Each structure stands twice: as C-alpha cells, then as structure tokens.
Image (cartoon, rainbow, N blue to C red; front, side):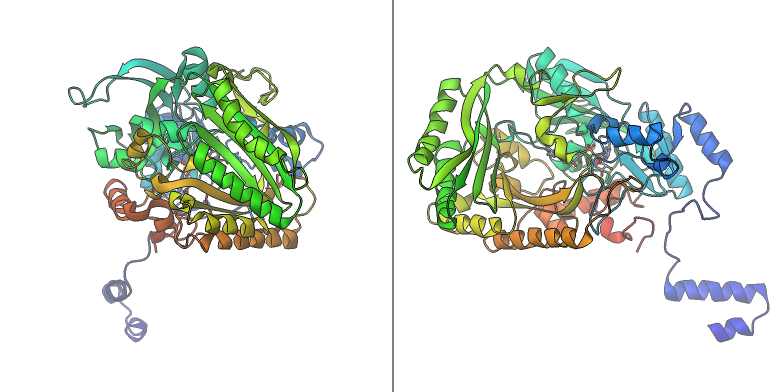
Length: 594
Ligand SMILES: Cc1cc2nc3c(=O)[nH]c(=O)nc-3n(C[C@H](O)[C@H](O)[C@H](O)COP(=O)(O)OP(=O)(O)OC[C@H]3O[C@@H](n4cnc5c(N)ncnc54)[C@H](O)[C@@H]3O)c2cc1C
C-alpha cells in the first residue's frame, strides 16, 4: 500500500489507497473530542447550548482551584471547611464525595456542566454531546465510590437542582391503567437526596419509602445501584420500589418508563448501574406504612485472646442465625484485628421489650465469662417512635451549618469519616445464607476469623435479603441486580482509606507505601472469604474498582440481557461509566471505542 501511495501523485489514487486501507485495517476508531482537539465545539456552539438551557451552562473548576493562588484566601478556606459537609460537596459542580482511590481514579472536573432544571435541559445536553462527540457524565448526589460521575473533559449533566418531592395517595404508572391497582407513592426529581424523601414521606406524612441509609446519597444513583438501608430485609431494595421513571434516552427523547412502557429499560434501571442506559430525570417510588416501632441494639466486645475471639464470633453467628435472621433486623457487625466485635443493629416492628429481650440473650452470655470477654463500649438496646429516626433532632445528626441550608438535610455522625475520604482499597462479597447452616458455620467462623487478622471485616446484614420477607426477596428477583442478593444473608465489606486528598488541596503528602500496604491487607482479608465463596457476587456501587469479573459479580446471569438493552437504547455508547454495562467496548476513559 505504501508503495502504491508513493508513486501515486493524483488524488483519485490517493482516495483509492485510503479506501483500501480502511477496508484492510477497519475504519478509524470512534473518538470523542477533548478541548484540545480541533473539532471540540467552538464558543458559538457552547453559547447556543447555554441559551437553550436557560443560561444554566457552567464552566467547571476543580474544588481547590483557588488554593494554588492563596492557601489562606477565603475561597480556599471555604473549600477546606466545606469538604466536611456532604451537602456542600454536593452543591459543587466539581464535587465528589470521595476524594479519589489509590491507583484507580482522581477527581478531575468536567469542562462544562448543565445545572439542569428539567428534562428539556437534560435532552439539550444529551443531543449536544451526541452531535459533537463530547464525553458525557451524569451526576446526582456525587456518592460514586468508583468516580463514575466524574470525567475530565466532559459535559456534565448535573441534576442537583431537580429536587422536587411530591406525594401521591393513589398512583398508577402511565399506561398501566386497568392493569395495576393504585398505590401510595412519592415522586422525586433525580437531584433529590434521601434526607429529602425521609423528611417529606416519614416525618411529615407518616409513611415509609425504601431508600439508602446515608441521607446525602442521590435517589437516582442509589436506585440504579439497587439500594439498601437498615430495613431492606423487610421492604426490599430501593430499586424494587420503583414504579416509574421519567428519563432522557441517548436519542434525546423524553420517555416515561414503567412496567407497561419500555419495560426492558425500566427493568435495567432497577439495579443495572448508574450512568449507563439513559439520564433519569424523575423517579416515582412506592411508599409503605411506617413500621410501628424502630429500635436498635449494640455494643463493642473485646476478647482476651485469639481463641476467645474465635469463640465470640461463633457464638455471635449462632445468635444471629437463631434470633436476628429475619425481616426485623438490619445494619452492621464488624470483626477487627484487635479481637473486638462491634455490633450495631437496627430493628423495626419490634417493641422495646422485644428488642431488649432478644439482645439480653447475647449480652448475658458475654457477661457470663468476664475472664474472656469485656465490653469495650457498653451494651444497649431499645425501641421507640419510628418518626423520630429522621426528625433531625438528637446528637447523632449533624446539621448543614450554612446560612439558608435546608434544615432537614442532615447527616449521621457515624458517616462523617466518609466525607471526602480517600480510598486505599475496597472489596465486597455477598455471603450465601447456606453458610449459616449448622454444618457450614465452622467454615464461616474460621474465614471471618482469618480475614479479621488482616483487616476489619464489616458484615452489612441488611444488604443481603436471605432471611428477609418473601415480598422483599420476590421483588428483588424482578430487578436487574445479581440474584445472589436474594440468597445472601449479608454483604461483607472490607475497605479502608484516609481523610480527604482532593487534588490541589493543601495537605501533607500521601504515604504511598503505607497506603499500598493497606490495599494489600484488604486483598488478603478478602482472599480468606473467597476460600469459602470462590466466585462471590458483589454490590455494583460498593465494590472493588479492580474487580476483573465485574460483569458476573455485579449482575450474574442478568448481564447478557442488560447488554442487549444497552445496545437497543444506547447503540453508540453515549453513556459510559467504569465497569458499567457495555463499557468493555471502550477505552478506560470512555473516549475511544475499542
Ligand atoms: C458515603 C457513601 C454512603 C453510601 N451509602 C449507601 C447506602 O446507605 N446504601 C446503598 O445502597 N448505597 C450506598 N452508597 C452507594 C451509593 O448508593 C451509590 O454510590 C450511588 O450510586 C450514589 O448515587 P449518587 O447520585 O449519590 O452518586 P453519583 O456519583 O452522582 O452517581 C452515581 C452513579 O449514578 C449515575 N447517575 C446519577 N444520577 C443519575 C441520573 N439522574 N441518571 C442516570 N445516571 C445517574 C452517575 O453517572 C454515576 O454513575 C454510599 C456511597 C457513599 C460514598
């Protein structure tokens, strides 16, 4: 070919060479543009987009951009203060609730953001990105551990301002009239966070909506993950409660999707992963009666020796299987290298007397061997009025201190360390309930003990639906989540990191060697659990960035169906996220089709 080109002075032959080379080597790969490319949209085209979204097109700067000029300037100090507040972070176009992940991703802002007001603004952004080959990113509550709402040189569709919440006494999805009974429900703009829904649905209206535990998480991101809180064993996943969504697809169409319209797309939105199939602009979720009581039990127990700790783990697993493995109980237990067991349980629909009675069975056993076990923090248990859980009073809630802040946008004191955290590593595994059978419990105990020698192991008991209500399990099987969630009694999470490390932020240098050691310990701990669950499922949004079996781990047998839906609604891959459905067709940054 080169020979022909060298002796060919005339245009037609050169055209011929180009045609031949493209037949032999295939067409040039599809590439999205960056600001440095000649085909990046010009100022006039951006101005036109700005006009079509009512002026809500913003240039985006890194959160600590001003610190380069002056570390003591007001803007830099404001950002340093702000990163302790998840709502401040959420209000920044470049904000990410996680400040990065060692060797995985670093926050890097979009070139522009549309602060969308409605579906029409979103459609304008989608059409612009498609027509100009601009990389698109979508962000709601900014809580992606994987950095999937953050992409350098992209156009960001930012739903933060779309946070209206509306209650319905009797909702029927559009087009489902005659096929479905009306049910109580709540609609929320894609930018709403769970604090908004819990306040309006539970505190004001006395109902319950299934969402996340962390109040600052965005509704659209959580539903597309699946979504759990303490009460998931009773009410199921957040995705299971989805009745309808307003969305904008890659062709720029605004659609109402539900069980009767675009049912495949609707199914994919229920746990098929965020930022992948379309932009959600509004969701409508089923609401329930509030449980009659909400309560909890907890304490921290230290074992004197390794053998005592093994005994403590075994006893707790027996106690869990006998008394807590049912729809009433959720939340976490942690097994730590210092031989402590930290228990933090949340209950619903059990009276104060019932909670205290169950908990005392375990506490009395611990107290009966003071030479082996001591309480590092005192045990406690109780239950009360369910509305008080989210009424934003009490020491456990931190209020947004900014002037004019929405008073019910609070966050839990126990979530403070997550704010701006920098991750060294993260792993999650669904542990099947078969491990709770009497003959398999010794294996489970040994694996938990062995894993806890390397790193703290958290069992998120509410993130596995085995032991839950029939309705919760049945509904989860109608979603796109890995069906492993239904046969698992818990999601085991092993993760660690340190305080904020945002780019440009003044902070002492990262101790890379120590951080990598930490990441390795997480791997070693996870390897111990893999010995008893060799091919574990994993929760897409709380998972290892480096999971090489991500398709199977996140979606199991559902992956081929999800891939087909992706191809149908987004054939050109406009929506791309790391380890999202169909992302294997793209370079890691989502700019080049492979
Ligand atoms: C501190 C913290 C606490 C958490 N707590 C919980 C918990 O209690 N329970 C639980 O189940 N999970 C929890 N998670 C995981 C969380 O549910 C997911 O990370 C979720 O995807 C976050 O949604 P978001 O809107 O806040 O985040 P974003 O980062 O804004 O979005 C997450 C993903 O969804 C996409 N997305 C966002 N909005 C839209 C939209 N409108 N249309 C299409 N795609 C969209 C983004 O592109 C991105 O890929 C937590 C995460 C963190 C960091």
